[in-house]
Image 1 (cartoon, rainbow, N blue to C red):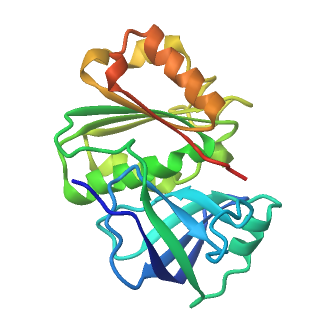
Image 2: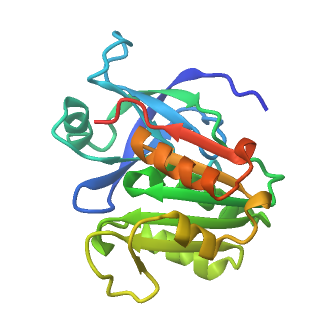
Length: 241
């Protein structure tokens, strides 16, 4: 399916605190935005100057296309863009350009996997929520690494989907301390953890989202673990600040 990129008007309707510095922002578009799970959009705070990289930024959809609203999630910083998000008031209207990206889910996939760290989880949420909402029989395995358990964004949602869907499994890892939750593994996502957990590498499509450094490191793990190269789908976040 080919989706046409265009600019949409949308009204700000809800703010959700995910972590201390991570917030989700929900918008109700004036017309439905057609996108595929895994895609991203551009928030245009300066629509008259599309080249303004300080105020016009790319963010992943962190909601399923099955929802009436669209959601984006951001780790807020001291940037002008983050400040614009912080000061949004209910009912404010903004412009969104969408959709972008080819690192997407296809309904006929049988087995998929994710190697994700930190805020790279946002497009994964869109994909897993879509699988849960549509009851797709896709076997999904998520490796999700953070510094501490307090840094795990969307944990409530991930645990809920995992509990309700036998085909969704999440492996949490933390790097900065010993986890309290015994189901959470101490350490990084590495080749050893991957080998112990994944016994069907040739059958899975693997997704890697995040910073260029994280994407490259996780891609190398996949390659060293004999994943089929054509089955490794990567998306480096653009101009993230």
